[in-house]
Image (tube, rainbow, N blue to C red; front, side, top):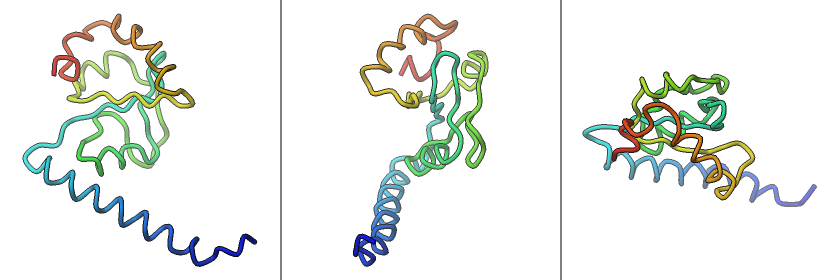
Length: 122
């Protein structure tokens, strides 16, 4: 309908090439140890991101400590996050921009054992 069939066919190949290039670069940095990651798509209550997000974490060089690729995002307890003790916490709150996410940082900071998490210490 838009008369852009060629571009539409080329776009996925270009995107896959970019993803492979980024994943290759990340492998060089994480050859000895992949950091554990908790990717939260919601803070209160905490939700661990599922679907394709754990795969994105893996491609970026990490290991998702809670989320499972191909499964739904799930509510998690703060105790589960503390038990996972991730090296990195990524906040990707669904529908929020950075400014809005920053408004919820005090919720995390007031959570039990926040200051003991490797992601906070490092």
